[in-house]
Structure formats: structure tokens, C-alpha cells
Image (cartoon, rainbow, N blue to C red):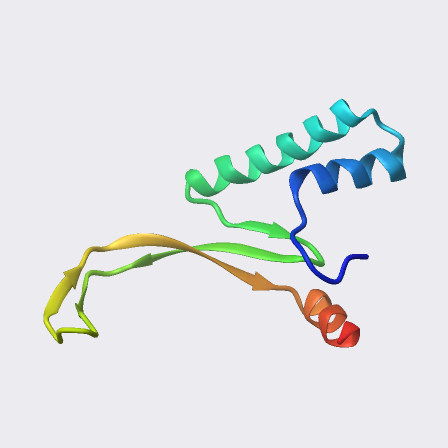
Length: 99
């Protein structure tokens, strides 16, 4: 496994290609399909849970007053929806064991 860098869609497709034996095009199509399905679910307001990996959670933040740190001027921050990721305990344990 790599120690530095970024895991990309192409890397995921290559891994599926090697382990499962699907063609590169089919592997990339599978990765794209999974990611599209996750994006659609999040766009519709659903949380996405991947067992053993973690949960992508949507949270609505209310309007609040913020402050410009440079000038100290108060500015309203509009309400918005944010996405957070909560890692599963299994993933946390695996990361802790690798360090």
C-alpha cells in the first residue's frame, strides 16, 4: 500500500481490475456507478453508511453571526447544509494500528 499520495478513482478501478478480473473499463464504470449512487443519495438528503468504513452525514446549520478575524466586523453567516464524515470504529482501529 502507498504511504504518500492520493487514492483516485483510477486507483480504485485498477484495484478492482486486479482483484476481480473485470476489464479496466468495467472496473471504472463500477467505481463511477457507486460514487454516482452515493452522490444522488446525499443530494436527496439521505445519509450514506458504508459498513466497516464510516458514515457520510448531512447536517443543517442554522444562521449565525460570524466575525471577520482581521477586522472584527460581525457578518451574518447564512444557513446551509454541510456534509461530515464519521469513521467507523473498525476504520479507526485499523488506522491506529498502522501508525
